[in-house]
Length: 294
Image (cartoon, rainbow, N blue to C red; front, side, top):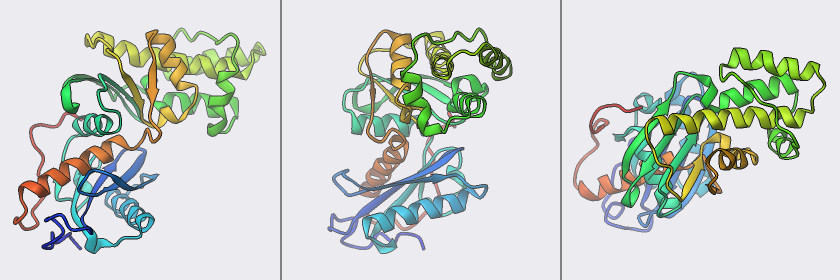
């Protein structure tokens, strides 16, 4: 069922909710906000092969968490790799814009956004109000993604993913990886393990190699890394990622309480504003401004 935009909902009634769904390559997220932009619920699941089903499931989870139902939804808007796959979406928008808007809402005044997800990484220079001034994205090489750290650390070190961050923070002498290629880096790590080097030093070395790669991508694009700098994406859940990026930048890096929320929140805010501008419009097909940047 598509949100109906009932009279009283779009007009500012207490039941008005706006849904933002971010269907990423690794995880899918949903955010529900009210007209004031307050987050009512946030949910996250692993993205399934069926992107549309992923959107349905994560949205249903958010509604359940909020104790609300479909009738309360005024607008459903979507971003992420699978944004066009969600058939009920009324508004779609590239994730770069949404990441910036959502991060600005959660951390006003942010100047640089570093987002590291499972399959890509982005460095965004931001202006007033969450505008995107310039950005650089890596979606072709695993070295600058969370996948690089997850594959090399969890598989080779046999440490649960949620323990890798605390383990890395105990490192006294992080190893140096001369290659950012996942295959060659794996060979180096195997050699370090054969030498009996501590797992903590290897885990932190992998994180530093990943952070170095991401920071270099931004510098190649002449992004100045102005502060405040905010780190988002799944990698930010790793408590040692903050230190790895701070060491590379020699600047403070802020990690949000919900680092995987910004894109879903950003598209929810876009959907709210769209509903405000077209109060009397009926349901329409997904609209996406401009060309794809993601």
